[in-house]
Length: 168
Figure (cartoon, rainbow, N blue to C red):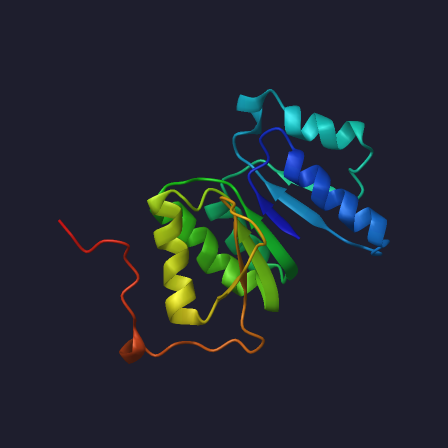
């Protein structure tokens, strides 16, 4: 599992709890957050207090720099949760690398999809690489995407416009 953004640790605790309760041997929950100190380490302290440091590891760097290293090191994840930067180019780069890191058929969940920058970045992957929306039973700011079971590289000729608004 890869998680981008830790903040106060609520989602990381839930993910780690699920991993532990499933008894998955050797599971690795990689959490990436360059700004944890701005939260006075509240998220990481919660992970430590819950005794989850054998499952979780925190990388205190920008995700756009860490993700390529994970890819180069052969890391593969079943899923990713993204709640990091909301700047379009940062989100786009995160999703580009997560497309490579999350196994085919895996899941990518994004928070704050009401932000045009986040929605626009993920729209590219939905329209051009076959990410399929997984529906929730209720209204939420989250969006979940199932990656295709077979990874296909789209042709430059089949590019589909992904912008929310073409104006200005």
